[in-house]
Length: 259
Length: 125
Image (cartoon, rainbow over all chains, first blue to last red; front, side):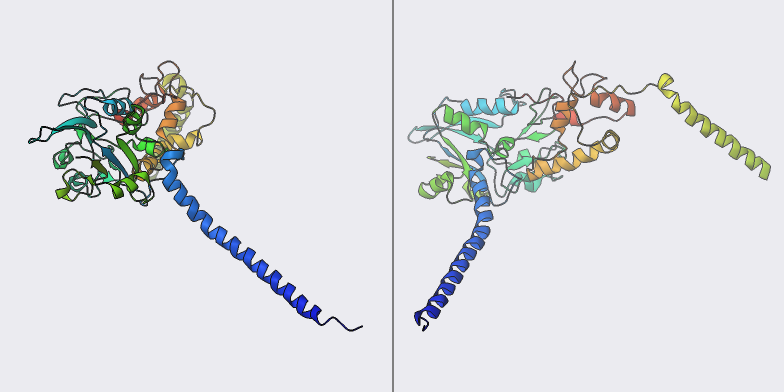
């Protein structure tokens, strides 16, 4: 019996193919391990506001921002202001000594008489003047771009209020009672829009954004300015948006359309 | 000289011993802080450790929470209040017998937390 001349080569072929198969499987496995953590990280960063996933902490990969479409903002509507007051436990008063974290303003083109309405609040600058002037380091910018006041170190000097070009900050003049659990507020400290940081950390939208959407205007879009795939970045890339007082080069996190 | 010194040591020892002995029966004569019972079961650390170190734990975590955005810490003031709020006043510092206030009054240490933070449990939606 002569051995089939093809059999050794066939064997060799089998070995080769099985080795190739093994390597393919191994490579796929390694690729899976390598890609999986990256994919998951990006998923969490992008999907935080939509899915309600709690964030593990502020990350500099993210920069939270808002895009306010003043053409959709209805004159006379104050739903965002009301929602902010309710969420953060503000009185809602408009005296000089009352805290106002967000205000509605009307602007008028002098020549044509065209009026527009838009909300004004802390613009969450990338280069915040309030942080520059703070003598105690209480005014600070979080890794994800949200500008906050650390009331544990705020001495109430109000330099930040003078430095802010947007008049966004308020000083608490009176003793506070029955504050919200998530929003500590106290006499003798400065405060401003926190972009509802307690909600953002839980993966939710800021109160004004939700209120505007439920009023049917959807004039405020909230999202990650650093992620080119986010709705806000896509709209900023495709429509001309403005920063208020662009000449100051503060690189604001709140942008406006239609002004 | 030596016997007089010895007498002094004896006298000191007697006084200290007396003081320690009096400490045993102090509950009846010396006012003690009222500690209201908590609503929950088990504290995050044991009682003796919390008595000495609660302020350090809170101070450490407040910076993580406010500046780092990490809201998953174990030593949250909110959870302290949720558990220790009085059943009568619904607060940890509204009356002198409430959990935080009673000890702080006893030790004459002013609490600044509740100048800004609420002293009532969070309202569950």
